[in-house]
Amino acid sequence: MIFLFCSARSGSTWLAKVFDSHPDLLYLHEPDTHDRGSDLLPHWFSDTPGARDIENTRRYLDRLIRARALRTVGIRPFFRKSYRGATAEKLRLGMVYGAKLAERAGLQEFADSFEIPDLARKGASPRIVFKSVSGLGRAEALIGAMPSMDPVLLIRHPCGYAASMLRGEKLGVMPPVARLGRMLETRSARRLGLTPATIENADHATLLAWTWLISNLEAVEPVHGANGTLLRYPDVALEPRRYIMPLFARLGLGWPRQTEEFLARSQQSQGDYYSIYRDASASADQWRKELDAPTIARIRGIVERDPIGAQFFVGENVGASV
Image (cartoon, rainbow, N blue to C red; front, side, top):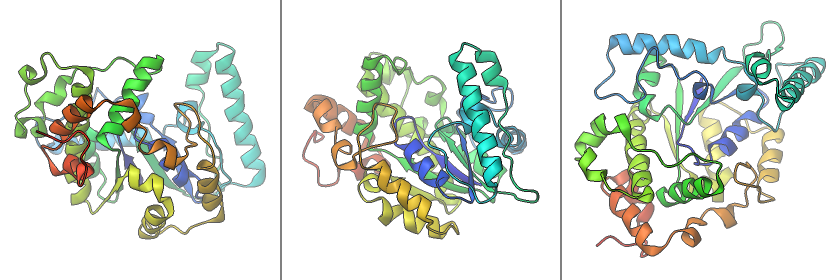
């Protein structure tokens, strides 16, 4: 399994769809947002996951790997697969669009419960690509539960993340910025001296900066320890072939024409807030136009407490820490 760890608003669906464009891969889109697994394990660990946590995580992963709900396998665009014949492709696509029509007709319960089968050829066992925006705090347990996993951690510029989240809240398509809750009990929070008192009167940008820092810190060491891959979204967005082609090679994947065509197509236009189509040159530094200097300075002052955040400000003058 290839596991894409990321936060919300990190460019992850675009990267996941680059993977999905590979004919040999089966993509599962954030099944852990529908099955939270709260009956088996916490979202944020206060200490190293124990043997029972790892076993519970295996059980949870088994559930997620079997998920085939519309919102898990019905994310456009769709791609031809080598493990599925032409007739099966058409039949499966018909099921997806039929479930989407039911959803639009108000039959939400039916759409949510309808499972879309893989319709893979007999004996075929496609490699799974799993994307999660909820798993950063569980990265250590998830990797420990599946040692064969190939983890990839995608990190967006902290100011880009904050600006996108604030924009989404203003547009009414993202929920209000949340308090940190149990994230404050993590080892990363304790190491940085973060307490409820630290953020008692914090504004939204400050909360987002701490969320970015703590959540990525909880994932980066497990990913490195598993010989995984760390990608910075600003780099990948501007030079996708330079970063994604070597990653595909490292994972034992070729570079099919379908992937090349999708990559080119995805960068030719600028879509809406949730679109995977992005003009990288226009969007990579959009945060510079959306955040004022004091806000950038607050975000920078927080994330520079660790090298994972400081790396994004090397050579930067804007929002310099004081």
